[in-house]
Length: 620
Image (tube, rainbow, N blue to C red):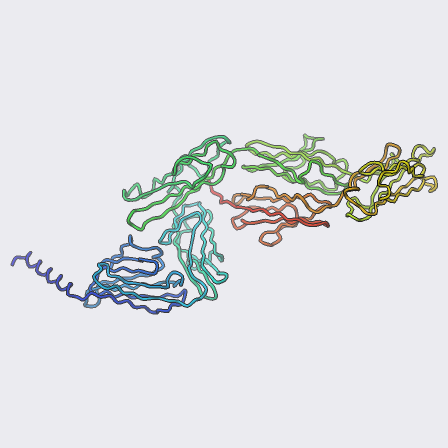
């Protein structure tokens, strides 16, 4: 017998021997009733078998051939198991494999588990795992705007930002924390990764707990260099003029698709309704301010037939050079009427795609800039400051102006004019009583100061001559007032004094200008009807208010009020300011949310809210 024939004989003998071995599979577990959050191990012993498959309640987990793991057959979440495999069982031919569920999740892991013969020549082995109801299950991790793979991996580029969100189903409120190794990195369900560097790489574990029962889930984060994805034209920031058309191509020249013909790679921009182009070719036609913002290109690699799908993204900021589109001054009126000594703050707000600068001037002296901020405060105002005030909002794209007239009404007294008019209350409440007092000084020779004429918002009320009322000249509402007069000739000081009392103040009838005239010349004042807050406006007026991380934001609240209102800003039910303007310096993503302004005076109150959305800031 030659050497070749002898080797063939030995091989046939071995094959006959292997075929004669009884094929069977056994499956045992360390516990059939598993405590949520703990680990449990299943042991599969397959005699006479060198190919086995592990299946769980949701389908196939992994496949071994000769204890070589065929990763292309791995199911989702395979990383939450620890699986071992050894070939031969003592002197017997076969396979032993152990599968450990690291953190038992009742929502995913209860049910039937199996160990199968990959050649389908032996009966499969099954075992059922159960768990007591503990009020927590189905822990899950998502990423925005990134994408978590089936094998719980996330790939990001340097300088990008991402938010990881951990969720679980709990009977009441779940408690969460994020760990990276031994470091606690977040104590909420969300973990923000901002302006990412290579140090962000590593394994993150979310811990979700309820009633002292804890589930865990891990996620491996990989950080690639930013030039893995390439923009053409290059750069992370593109500035265009309003009306210009721009196109940007997205590619990944460093991707594995250039080195492996079996890889399938896709570069695709997020879908934007105001853009054109193809999946990897972004076109912004006839740019307008509304088209400014963040655009993302997503890059995906996939090898068909192998569980090797992953993706990442790169963000491009587009700015549109445009001037202010609208401007509003608050209080939002053409004329604001004040009394001497009061303080007023005029707030100017413009819709600016690119940040605006503000300046204030007056019409009486337009060469002098009196403020370089959006808010102009005039303290202890006097009649000399009665003027028209101009606000200019400007940026690199242009400028826009708005105007408001500030009127100052005062209790007039001018010794040279020999007359005065004062009131007990310029802001009376409806139904209350208010008194106006008019004084006219007689000249040494008597002169014409013997006449006192009362005029109200709707015309003449009463006329006195030497303090005798000329009833034939009474106004139609004379019975609604009490009027008296003391002749100056009887007092010895030469002053004639007349008082008019409104006993039941009715705004529709009594609010407005009142005057006391000596013949045709004399003082006047204004009685203002009190009112609760109305026309509450928050600026910026856009909702949501969009701002970039790290920038400063001023929220300005205004309302029409008589008398003046108090302002309170709240965020998450916490008072953050007690003035009309709330400024946040160097805003962060954690300050996203709803901000509410409450406006109150003695008449009533009103509220208005706005949403603030903080976008990530990217370095160019």
